[in-house]
Amino acid sequence: MNSILSDRVLNMEESATLAMAKKARELKSQGIDIISLSLGEPDFKTPQHIQDAAKAAIDEGKYFSYSPVAGYQDLREAIAKKLREENEITAAKAENIVVSTGAKHSIANVFMCLINEGDEVVIFSPYWVSYAEIIKLAGGVPILIEGTLENNFKATAAQLEAAVTPKTKAVIYSSPCNPTGSVFSKEELEAIAEVVKKHPSMMVIADEIYELINFVGRNYSIASFPGMFERTITVNGFSKGYAMTGWRVGYICAPLEIAKACEKIQGQFTSGGTGIAQRAALAGISGDQAPSKAMAEAYLRRRNLVLGLIQDIPGIKTHVPEGAFYFFPDVSAFFGKSAHGYDVKTADDLCLYLLAIANVSLVTGEAFGAPSCIRLSYAASDEELVEAMKRIKKALGELA
Image (cartoon, rainbow, N blue to C red; front, side, top):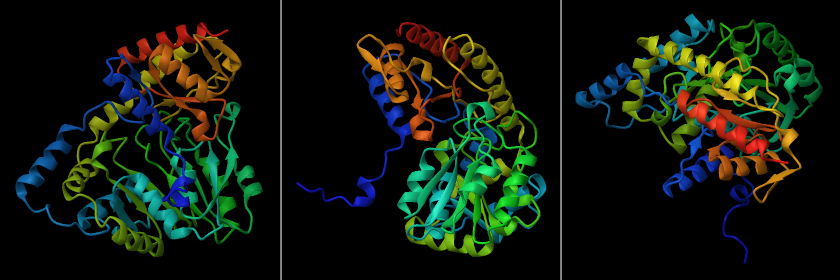
């Protein structure tokens, strides 16, 4: 019997990160002690001053009705101010900002506004799992350019230039990167910008959601470079740096034509985001930044902790992440091995093996465009990380 469902949804891949998290929750509900290192979710609580702002907004009683589609004006002004002062995107104004229900929603808006059937989008790979599926949903064709472990998983401007065709509509990257934690330097971004400027019809989508979790110093925004504001859509939000994943507040800064188009499409799909969450976001971006800095320092300490533990496992190869809260090690040395009735042929198999035998939830690199790798989130307590790595080392050591 033919399915009643559309080809659009039948052809779409399920989010691998959410699928693995679902499996972990199911096992936990059965009483199994699962350590989940699969989701990119801070384990910190939302800072207290942000919580207090949300409570005050509820008590004030002004934010229960529909919010403006593009977000409250004062929040948009605060975001633009932040981008001008901290990111040196000097042309940013409130009219360039569209607030959405998370950065994922922002990216979906952008591609629905930019892509016609058959347009190509170059993706710096490894890449966040949803980029390719959103592009395909919009009728586009993902074109991957792959960074290697030896180059900290960063594809180059030369690779971008080689991938551009007359059908290329946009290029997208994240920095700090999910899943690798790599950070593009100013020089690397300048080289990318020079390629883009050679192709007048091509836009850049710069995903900077992990901006505040950066271990190598300043995070550079490509939109701040000469001639790039009108060629760039900057995506950011509050989930990672402010531990506000469940509040669902993200935003873009884009040239006016694109910002208005995203507002238009958002008006048909969701309208404006939750008013209370926006008041909380305003407190986050304009208030005390010390909690965000403290979280970043904790992530750096955990990175160093996990790095030592990973390097103690024979067969795993890794680089040193420069931001975000992930390791993305190459585990291909374990392919072709077996234990406990499991034959490990792929990273998918290895993740299922580690879930069943080590009771640790990870995500296959296949979903991120790197089939030799797995993603490990260290957004967990020190105790959980030490125990998880102990279990992983033992389970991997039993493969033969």
